[in-house]
Amino acid sequence: MVRNIMTILLVLAGLVLTTPSRGQHAFQHGEKITFTVFYNVIGLYVNAGTATFTTKETTYQNNDVFHVVGEGATNTKYDWIFKVRDRYESYFRTDNLKPLKFVRNVQEGDYKRYEEVVFDHENKTAVTNKGVIRIPASIQDVISSLYYARNIDYNKYKKGDQINFNMFLDNEIHNMYIRYLGKENIKTKYGTFRAIKIKPLLLKGNVFDGGEKMTIWVTDDANRIPVRIESPLTVGKIKVDMMQYSNLKYPLTALARVR
Image (cartoon, rainbow, N blue to C red; front, side, top):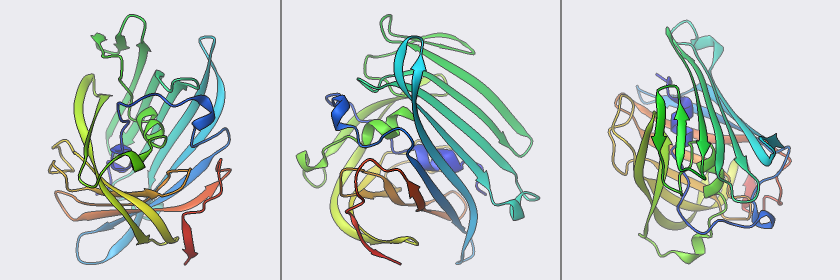
């Protein structure tokens, strides 16, 4: 039902644009954002799980980095049906947001997987559990890409514009895009926001049919945090709402009304 909670939240990937300077970052040390995942298969949305993202500044291989941890879990009342405990980590540089290390440690029912990816941007390689893979200069992992995308100035784009990006996932480089759909107000479980509306290209798989079927709304302010994600699934449909936040870098001025 919700075995891909983190995948659902991480499809908002990084865009291949000019790297922002440190002062332009939309996030900071200590930021924490929590989402609730709602699943609908019979006409009624149920609280199926949560996902939380935390950000810290630290060092890795003598580089100043942001260490972001994304954790997803099913609601405990549904664990007897299908238990999910996923943890994703990314270490990416504070100056250019390029990833240096990515970790995925997932438990989804009887399925367990642990993997590490170490990025060598000087030699344009990624070292994985399965060997060494050549990468382009603009590559992001699924966590770093989300935070890279939060720095994008969408005011530079027209409604309908398609923006390309590269993402490293499952030992492959995926050439994808995101489509900008303009701005609108969106009412969520938390409240009503002024938002930027986008649609990412999805890869066809066990959960998604592929194509431009997912819609994401991010705050139309300096934080650029996702507040609503909606998508049909191969069975049922999903809705994800931002429900808690702390230590944002900027005031959440896009919040028009708290529910």
